[in-house]
Image 1: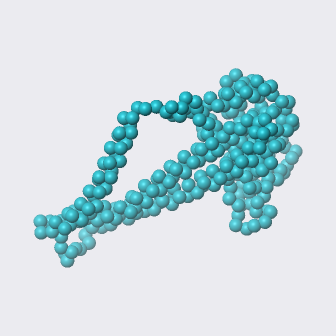
Image 2: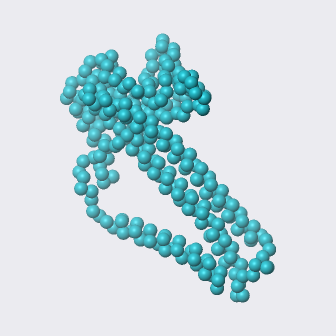
Length: 298
């Protein structure tokens, strides 16, 4: 009887909590009330990364809870398998094939839980770095609003989100933000990334994917605006690397993507990117972009 009480003290509370959560979820699904908002809500900087961080937090806590209850659950199963009419006698315990199976199950659950904990903690750290980078770039873009630019954040595209869009005077800028950690060593060389119009040469590695991603997002945005009736607008891809010093090399080759730390973002308001667009076109672009954001119900 004492063993059954021990097992029940573990399983009954867990069952009650699980049943309560499922009942609450069912009750929420029956609530048909609608949001009072009738306009789409534009995303804040890093909105997608915030959701990703929250998702990693949830999965980290799930893995932690599973790891914590794995031992008691396996122990309960082992006790149930050894119970007989006379109860449980510890003096007769001897490791057999069945006992080794329970040990293997326990080790597998513990290993799986540990892997999930490390995985989601690592991904959360990466997402946090990305969020801080996007907030940094957004902060640098804010002064452009006083100069007449329109700034959109976390714009939904076909594959993912465009981190920032700036509707400037003569062009539209699609900004892809990347966060890369610096080496442990200090000095100018450790914070310098060289860009030869095709590759990014960091102190520890070389990359091309961020350039390709920035170019793809700009091409998609230009096609999206064209399909929405905005003709003749130029979309310029920008790769933002906040915190890094970017050095252009091989200037003989024209760069298809601008790479900048965006600390001084006023270069986007320069007349070098074309004559000023009509104000009606800029307002049309802003309207088309704002309609892309999902409604509160979604």
